[in-house]
Image (cartoon, rainbow, N blue to C red; front, side, top):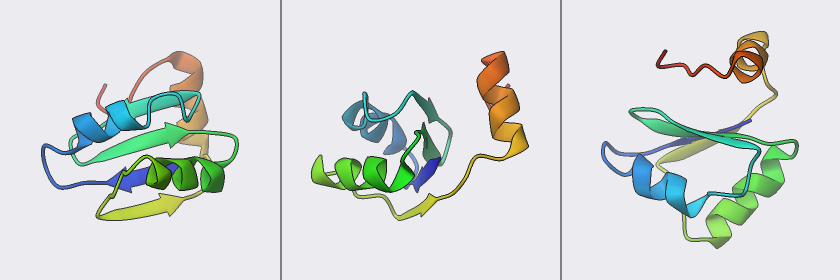
Length: 77
């Protein structure tokens, strides 16, 4: 999983730029989540597309992430 944090209003255009880099892209009010098997690779490709988040974090998926993925729900639900 890759978390990309943005200033308010920038996450929607960033999500469009990273489309296709992950199995699932989720847009939240302050960040974009990329669900990918290789987070480091997804982050590198996002940077190569010109995506410049305020901060980024690559981490393993948690049980909550797996639940949301399997049920098709989002953190906003």
